[in-house]
Amino acid sequence: MGLTRRDFIKFAIGAGVGVLIASGPNLISGLDKLLESIKTVYRRNNPVNATETVTKTTTVTETETTTVTQAPQTYTTTTTVTETATQTETVTKTTTVTETETTTVTQAPQTYTTTTTQPPQNLAEILFGNSNRRFILLKITDAKIDNTTAYLTLVNPLTKTELQIELPAQYVSNGKLSIEELLESVNNYNSAHRTNYRVYFVLGRANIYQAIQQNGKWILPAPQIYYNIIISDRGWEDVYNALQNLWNGNATVAMPTSQQGPYANSLWGWMNGIGSVIIAYQNRQQVDSVVDNISLADYILGTPNDPNPSNKGILHVDTIADIQQAGDYNSGGNQYPVYNVNNNFNTYIVFIQEQGNQLFSNL
Image 1 (cartoon, one colour):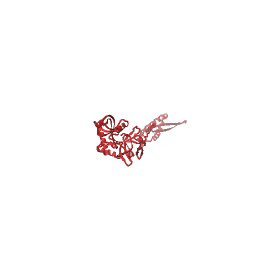
Image 2 (image 1 turned 90 degrees about the vertical axis):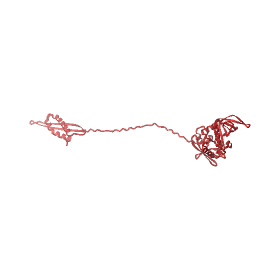
Image 3 (image 1 turned 90 degrees about the horizontal axis):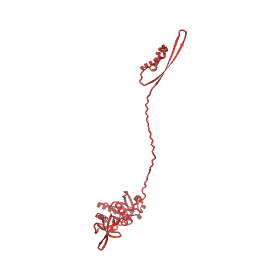
Image 4 (image 1 turned 180 degrees about the vertical axis):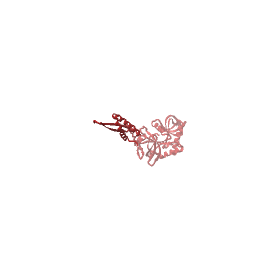
């Protein structure tokens, strides 16, 4: 078993003191050699595995006492060796530094603009909005009538929205025919003949703001409203265009019959304020359209093969067109004006209501 460093030093010093005493004046030099020898022996006998840094400080205190007598002389030498051993350990430290980066984002103040659109407050706003339209076409999809009130379901073709209205029954009936029966007959005719006739409620803008909403239905101010009920196989844009031209004075109404006139593509007809006339259409297709509308009117009225259903005062078959007088036709001593159709806006069936104000009174 190896000696400790301190024990080894003590042992070595003790063993070498005698040698040093005998050395005399070379005491210091011999001491250094002794210490170096001690280190060498210690390292050989006590190898270390750890890394050790040893700093040694050696302090040598020499006290010399000389006693002089005449004879004999005695020399006493006292040597004190003080060793201070300082052991320094070298420690390797590994420091892990975790850096946390904090980013502060300062966002500029944001301004939010909220636009709240208020729903329309009255029927005029719902139907006409900000437009300058004087009337609107609403497609009738359902009609119910009791003794006093008619209930209509309408679709606004501009917005594709549904609308429920109520009005007095006599405003959409004519003694022998009601709006409910009219719509049912048109639907049955379409099914039987594979046609696509529609019933339009043409509502004027004047006074419509007076309509009152109750339980989701709009009650029309009957004495103040202006309207027509028109049947056509045309889309609402075509019907609107025809009525707009009539409103602006660019078209005239003529009521044709199914009786052939004296000229090609001509029919006998009637014009208010003039009487019997001959209407010369542009082509056979326009004549066929007239005949088809007369057939539907006869079906609705239950008067088949009547060449002039308009004379019943319930349904009028009306051609709306730009018409120009082209001459006269003489027959049996009578003279009949002949009118050429320059710009045809098609032929329509107009329902004549028992009461109410017509928007287009010349239909």
